[in-house]
Length: 272
Image 1 (cartoon, rainbow, N blue to C red):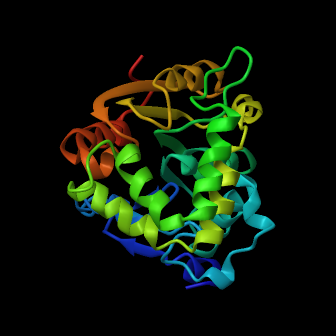
Image 2: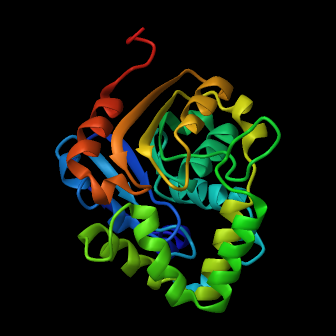
């Protein structure tokens, strides 16, 4: 394996001719997809990797300049695909990774047959005529809490994000991966994500997009899915799931897995 693949803990599983790349969001790692992966192995080559800064990656590889923008993560993704000689893939990105995949697809649309965006948002901060879900004061308090007592913040944030109490298996799983992040890196990553504004790139995305959104998500208001649908230049389709929380792959796998499989197989053009 090459340098990028090794640094990102790349795993390639399954036996098929078509590649599927599974990418996780903030506070998690590739284990986020553990319920979903078994359904793909017979038909696809599945590429799993960890975003730089995840607790499973070597913090020495985290570049505080490169990884202070989503473009840095998109470059990482393209480096991985290049090292693995992947010429075409279905990309499934959760949360921030949906936008990372979108950025990567602008410079290399030939590498992506479709983008499946789960819980995606181009901007988390409210703006004039735009509801992202957060005011700047909300984000400042979030960053202060991470900086002052990371473990305490994790304990409060995990059940809010997942949509459950601390006793639930999904909350415990998210708490584990969140705790694994180095606090100073977690703060940089959180700032990079929550202060990002990717609205201007949506008109440059030409790869078909499948937008999958939870009905109730504290991080991404449900109307964001429609905003993406209206502003992406690419053909797109929206499905809102009757799930609660930002990590439905962990909290509601029985609902999410059939939806993901449907969109992997669905051709937007043919379905019209």
